[in-house]
Image (cartoon, rainbow, N blue to C red; front, side, top):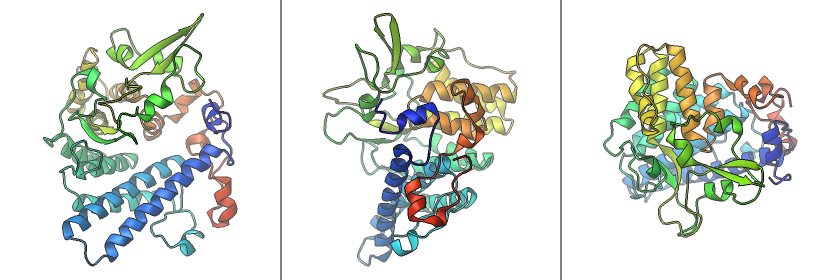
Length: 373
């Protein structure tokens, strides 16, 4: 792993505010926020756009902006809420509280939902639709423990005929699946996905990312995800494990990077139902992924806490190396303290990253720094 990238310090849980990855994630997100704001302002000021185009473009831009704000808030906590392109305002913004950021995300997503339709504007689902906005809104509701509101949004996704649960484990990461809500196409035709580039190694010790033994060991022999989604790499007397969800390294004809898929909707719905003590109603939604992996289904009687523990475990097995799931799931469950098992130096303040030093120097209004850094 490149020691100058800042990722080693993330892995070792030794982040400081000058870490290059901390700054890169922040600056890239805010650059994209500027673009989203520019699109929104352009649409609002246009006098010639057809109404249907106006709604779609603004709806998509609001959705993308909401996704960016959601991940920024989850990672950094209180952040500047940049909702215009006016740099004379933006460069002096104070931080907005996490609660108010989430309020804004809810507002924007509800507007996006009214503007977007369920129809995809590309058959390969490389642009988001209304149901993607509803999924993100459900996630925000769950962060705020609005379980019933989240349930309504998640059921709206599941009940839509556009989506079908993928029962074949070997086809989960194929681009044509009807279980996919949103995916990203590689830059050039036939290129491998970014996941293959990030996680592949063979024949030598890994120089980048390998799976931890702590993760690999949670899979039982019966769980077919271990055979299909994890590859062992043995060099001499040492064995490492790599993520092997995406298979095509060259001449990739059928894999795009999946952002959201129906399995996540199922497990989120199971969680929201369990949190409302609807245990029997929740079981089919966790059992769908369990049975596809050839695990025995969970049955009644089972306690609320035991079911929530199983859902969190299922999330880990189903979504490892996908879009930062584990950290956000643990955070939502208020279980980030579990990380002390693999990160002995874990402290509660690590639940957010430090604000980038460069940003604090340019805009002192963003002070104080996050606690602990």
